Image (cartoon, rainbow, N blue to C red):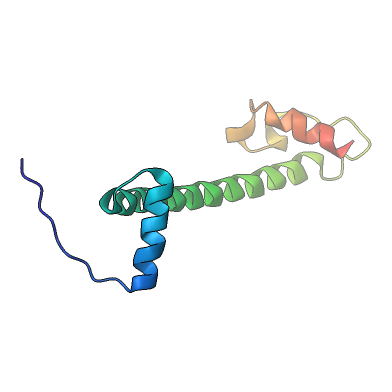
Length: 101
């Protein structure tokens, strides 16, 4: 399979920066562009992961509030009605309870 090439016009300052980046990584200019595009994809994925983790943190805080609520100073019950059913067997509930003490 033959590779197709295209020409891209860049300001000299950008080309110099790209050449420096490529040289420091031992890449060609094309390889440097490909690497930077991959890094951007990874960055976007990490942002999505961070958003999910923030959402999970919020859910865990809500669970903690429900579980510990007015039970501060007393042993919190682990009966199903105290926490949402999807969190009943979650080992993090005990960890979160312990952090309040």
